Length: 307
Ligand SMILES: Nc1ncnc2c1ncn2[C@@H]1O[C@H](COP(=O)(O)OP(=O)(O)O)[C@@H](O)[C@H]1O
Ligand SMILES: N[C@@H](CCOP(=O)(O)O)C(=O)O
Image 1 (tube, rainbow, N blue to C red):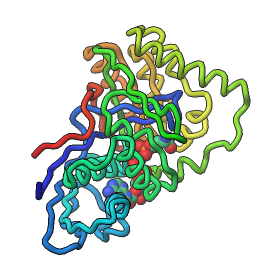
Image 2 (cartoon, rainbow, N blue to C red):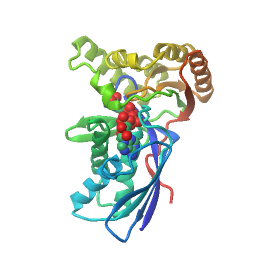
Image 3 (tube, helix red, strand yellow):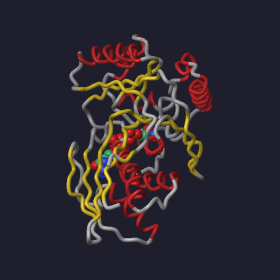
Image 4 (cartoon, helix red, strand yellow):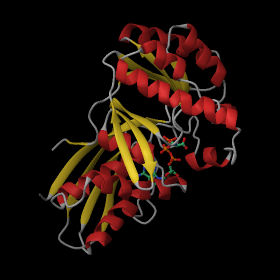
């Protein structure tokens, strides 16, 4: 194989209660990337559309992921790389993860699949580290596996695929401001009260149980974050306004997508999700900040080959 074109989905990390542990993949929203072998051994980013990102291979996390994979195999490979970003970096929708997971998947395909899925996640996590300083696995695992995922353990890395109830829809409102994941991690508390920890891990258990049993009321009661959201919401203008609008119009729950600023809501059924989207839009249209919204199914597919 001399060339591969892939699609890598946008993802929502944390899903309220599962900081660094839960993630889901979005349907239809994501990045396209084309990797073409070169005669020589150079890695060249030839095109970037949709975002202002570094062309220098050592400054773009795509280069970090490729170099780690080639080094592991003691190989050299020349590539032209085209990156078409479907959404902006710093949006809370896993932009760095879409690039990192898409690159790990594509290079593995070009090399004849020498690596396991867990190894691909580990390479993609190096890309996340290059972007935000931490080897987080939630976005890249959701992007590579598709659906809803749980990071059961970071060391050793263990990913569990969770069921996705048929009627679960996600709505998102993206205020047009950028929040770097690294900055949003720096505001987090180092210690948390035991009472908050108990509430949080009980909600994670409740959410996962609700996904397995298709129990939307249980999912709804569990979509709460008492640890991260109270701190990070201060970085997102009018967060409570949008969250309340989503909840009042029938959403099961709402919260910060990844590190923000995107605000997400989960709903049962497309009709409710559309009503929720309209309410979120209406609430934000009275503010000074530009935004866009969308409603999506949760994608059962992860990164995939287009051609
Ligand atoms: N291919 C890439 N895709 C996205 N971001 C990249 C890429 N290469 C480097 N970066 C850098 O990573 C940072 C974005 O990552 P992050 O803050 O985690 O945003 P997001 O939440 O969208 O993933 C930016 O500083 C950006 O310049
Ligand atoms: N668990 C991470 C997820 C960051 O997601 P992103 O899409 O904002 O990069 C965190 O919350 O810091």
